[in-house]
Amino acid sequence: MKKLALAAAISLAATSAFAGGVAEPILEPVVIVEDTSTSAGGIIVPLLALILIAAAVASD
Image 1 (tube, one colour):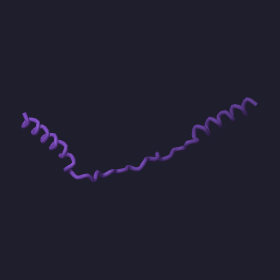
Image 2 (spheres, rainbow, N blue to C red; image 1 turned 180 degrees about the vertical axis):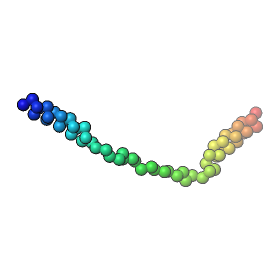
Image 3 (cartoon, helix red, strand yellow; image 1 turned 135 degrees about the horizontal axis):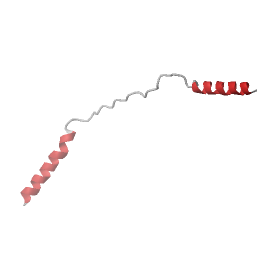
């Protein structure tokens, strides 16, 4: 009876150890988002800031 219990315990341990198997990892697809704004968008704010500073200096 002890041998039967030992065999059952070993078989359960062996099946749980190999239950997952070796599988390829699932990778999420790479999403590339292209920015469609114009390049002038990055220069408008500094130009407005320079104009406001120049107007403030000129008013004094």
